[in-house]
Length: 202
Image (cartoon, rainbow, N blue to C red):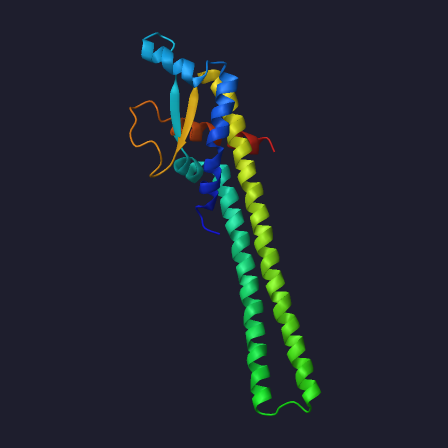
């Protein structure tokens, strides 16, 4: 699993954030609001954006969840490497004995071969189980971050009243914006403050 996998998955929350923001802000539809802006009225669409790369690299909950996930992955890889090395050594020993007539009978050689095949199959099964478990854990981690961020933004927007909150990342859709449109730092600061407050209450 790559470090950036979480970032790539969480970026999917953009569409849902927009829907939540539009619903809870009580503003007009983007089309109507944009028309109002073009017409020169005071009721202009209020658009801001968040850089998800920066958010996820600096939001303490995201950092801790990612580090814990990577630690589990490292432990699993270590376990698999140890098992793989043991099976390889057993396979090498089996071949050496076979070539040097080290088995007292053909039946004993077949038995040793079958035992080795069973271990190899069990190892492949363990590999798949660990991959499946890692995938489930990553999905749960992404959902937890998604819920934390979107729930925060719903409350945050009651105070701010934005019409649309966009998401971008390095090389993303927002290539240029005037000062004031990027609310990433404020969001990160407030998310971290809420997270610290939650920790202190435990």
